[in-house]
Structure formats: C-alpha cells, structure tokens
Length: 498
Image (cartoon, rainbow, N blue to C red; front, side, top):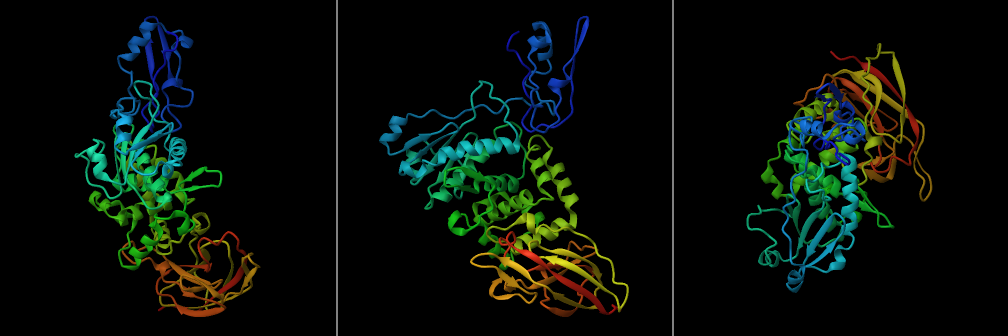
C-alpha cells in the first residue's frame, strides 16, 4: 500500500524491542523499523514504508492487530493526546476588548495592548524547536495536525471569565496555569517576565502533550522555569535555559536573589528537600525559585548534565524515578557538596562549568618536616591540594605569585592577600581561600566546604574535620573567565592530631 507506514513509538520511549512478523510461507523481520536506540522515540529514519518491503496489505493488517499505535516500551497509544481546545469567535471577543495574535505554534488572546506581545509568538515558535531538541519529537496527532497551543494573557480576569475563556473549574494559580493545550497567564509589568511566564506555560503544554506522563512537581515546574528563562539578542533571536546575567536583563525573574534570601533566612533546601516540595507550595514564589535552581544546576553542570538531560526521555510510564535515583546516587556526596556551594553563593551569571569541582582525594603529609606544594589557578573554582588534613592537627599554608583578575579598564593584578577595592562574598577578590572537603562524608552534617579559611599570603589553622584541603582564588562566580595565572601554595603540618 503506497504511503502506509508504521507509526513511531511513544515520545521519549526507550527500549530495544525488535519485532518479527510472520506470514504464510515467509518471515519478515522489521528490526530497523521497530528498534529504538537513540532515546528520541523511534530511531531516525525508522518509518518503513511497506511498499518498499513488498509486504502485501493483508500482512500489514495482521501486524496492525498487535502493533497499531502502540509503543514498544509499554503499550500506550503512540499518539499525543487529542486536541480538545474550544474554537472562539474572534470577532465577538474583539468587541469585548480581547484580541488575538497568532504564530505557527501559539495563538494568544489578550485584553492588553497587542504591541506588548508581538515578540511572544516568534519566541514560542523558537521554544518549540528547543523543546524538541531537548526532549525529542512529540508523538504525532491522530488527525495529522501540527502541535499548537492557545494562551490567554489576562489583565482583567473577570473579562475573560465573562467571555467564557476562563473556566470556573480551573484550579487557583499564582501567575499561570496550563491545562492540556491551553494556558492562562496574569498580565505582568515587565516585558521579560510576561514572556517568561508564557514560555513557562507553553513548556508545560509541550511536556504533557504525550499520554501517560508521570513526573514530580519540582521537575515539571523547574523545567518550565528553566526553558522560560530566556535571553533575546539584538536580532530578536531567543536563547533558552539561560543563566540570568543581570537583574535588569531579567526583570521580574528574581529567582537568584530569592534563593539567597531564603538561604540567609535559614530556609535552605537540599536537593532532597526540593524533591519534597508539596504541590500546594507552588502557590508561592520560593517553590519556583528552588525548582529552577535545581534544574539550572543539574542542567548546567558538566558532570551531571548528561544524566539530567536523559531524564527528559523518561517522562512517560514509571521510568522517571529510577532514572532520577541513578543520577542522585551516582553523584553521591560530591553532588551534595556542589549543590550546597552553588546555592549558598548563587550570583547572576554563575559560571557552572568553571565552578565545577574536580574532586581528587588527598593523601596525608609524611611528617612534621614534610611539605606539599600546588598551583591554584585563578580561572577556576575550588581545586584539590592533594593533601588530606586530620581533625585536630595544625597546619601552615603559605602562598606567593600573582594573578590577573580582569582586563577592563586595565589588567587587575592581585597577590594572595587580594585586592581590597572589590569584594565577593565579603572577602577581597584575588584573596586565596581554603576549605576542607570532609572525608568520609557525613550527609547529616553541615557542608564542611562552607567553612572557608582566608589564607592570603599565609596562615595557620587547626583542621576542624578530616578531609581533603581545597583552595580557590576568590572572585565573583560570573567573573572567572577573564582571569589568568596562578598562586603557588605550600602546605606543612605543624602538629599532628592526637
């Protein structure tokens, strides 16, 4: 039958199923068509046209008895959920003060000035492509229609309710809510945050378009926050999953200062705490801030990004939680340490790749007269000294050398004591800092690397815990890329622990 093809598997499906179909007098193996290897649904190019296989129509009919529209993974329909959006009379709505703007993927109704939302449609279209690249292609629609969403941007909710556009059955929401292929968003004061919320809800519509999606609330909201956090260049092109670089470029976002405020108020959350955020807490902004921070950290960190990205291919059925547990278990105590450091010192433009720690357990110094020297680079975060210190022992650390911390307006040269005209986290930039990574780890104890020692040109200290000694050149976490040079640091043990 010309044009007949085997439908692709459910969105995000994984598995290695290959099917063999038996016919009278012949056996035809369709492994290339029904095998999945790349995590994006069916393998690229795997729609096999039956006419090319020369399979008679009766054979296709037999195959359809057990395989039509079913995924290889778990037997769920191989189509996205049906589009049940209502059709609206745009002329009537216009007479009520509600106008529409439309792009390929989004039709948006608003009771505000239409020029405020002209950039939203192109951004939503670009977001769709970014979501496909990240999560994989959506399953097809049964009617062959393209994926698109209807949104409602509301300055006056009652106007939308009177027009029949805001259902009474819609649960309460803080700033936005989605249901199937529709979403509702409250009007905002800033252009950035208006787009952010619309893109946030558009992401929900995309992620829940496949059937049988089962993901935790923190991940659902965190990923919508992650993709909603965007930057627009001078040509109007949008970049998603952006780390906010300055408050004025992301007006209304506020997630970074909110995480710092919550932490300073004693409401810091471990990753386990983020997992446990109750759904009703998402009627308050802190829940969104913590969920965004978790997703931004795991998505942007070079050691955890691949496994975190893979979670996006495990959102259907019961496959998400085992994949998440594998990610957290493989990260172990090092993941807990880096999350704690990230959230306690989160800044605009935080450079996750350069802040990433290469954990290298140290070895004890040989004796009182022994010393160990190491170079500490200025363009990275915490770096292992290779020395294991013991709780109760006294050590001496000395440092020399120069580093360059910036080039504008001229090179900023610093020695280990730091440059006192500019501070980061309460200490001069360029100052040599030390911290101990507790070994063995104690998940119930406070993160030991939060207790940092100002070394400067030199200092003596008694180790408060046993672990590897780490160093860094103090600077803003968004300013590491233009640093250069290193300090030479020497560690000596003065008095052994008892």
